[in-house]
Amino acid sequence: MTKTLAVSGITRSFRGVKALVGVDLTVTSGAVLGLIGPNGAGKSTLVNIISGYDRPDTGTVTMDGVDVTRTDARTKARNGLARTFQHGHTYHGLSVRENIEVAALGTGRRRAEARRRATELMERLGIADRANQLAAALPHGTERRLGVARALAIEPRYLLLDEPAAGLNEGEIGEFGDVVRSIAAEGTGVLLIDHNIRLIMAVCDTIHVVVQGKSFLEGTPETVQRSEALAEAYLGRSGRAHDAA
Ligand SMILES: Nc1ncnc2c1ncn2[C@@H]1O[C@H](COP(=O)(O)OP(=O)(O)OP(=O)(O)O)[C@@H](O)[C@H]1O
Ligand SMILES: [Mg+2]
Image 1: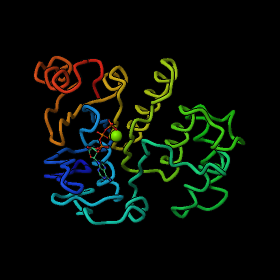
Image 2 (image 1 turned 90 degrees about the vertical axis):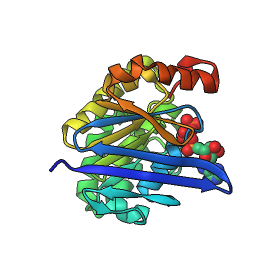
Image 3 (image 1 turned 30 degrees about the vertical axis):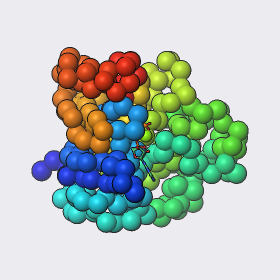
């Protein structure tokens, strides 16, 4: 049986504001699912719910068949569900290396193993030259990559990436795309949110579109790119097609 992280019928309101009104999607082990939608569509809210930082009003989240809808974030992380944050969430007073080591230690790795893992991950994310710099001093794009390294430190089975490539230049985005593919190739199921459509198209096996809190369309990159309904949904909302995701 293929292993999956599946969400079904998710709704969530914040004091009357309906952020999510019905999302169904499945992240499959070894594959990359892209999650796109206009600003305010509910993408980060969904990541918060899946990762246990928030709870849905209705709907379920299952991980390899086990209902984890109301499981807290820490337990989910220990069970192999990692995420990054759209806004920061690194320890500014710690170095790049220490940030990754702390993440590894937090899920029970021993010190030597955490250290080895940090070295490996800094290489992998292209941030080894910053090992001893404080996270507070990092450029935006580098801090995002540190966030991904921290998430990978727990050797997750599922990884949720909330706009990890923001602040990277085109060359760095290409390299980052290769890293995402390599993560999936190791068997991890990846959910990738990003506003860079070229990255999404290049990296994702399947793309899921949410519009105004609702699952709108899902398909291969080709199908989604060709969808007229999608173009209309974006144009209707922002007036600029390239503002997508
Ligand atoms: N904690 C909260 N309290 C109140 N409203 C919230 C909260 N979190 C999200 N919202 C609202 O829910 C809606 C969805 O927000 P969300 O951040 O999930 O969108 P998004 O798709 O991630 O957008 P972006 O692409 O800009 O990151 C927005 O209207 C937002 O203002
Ligand atoms: Mg967001």
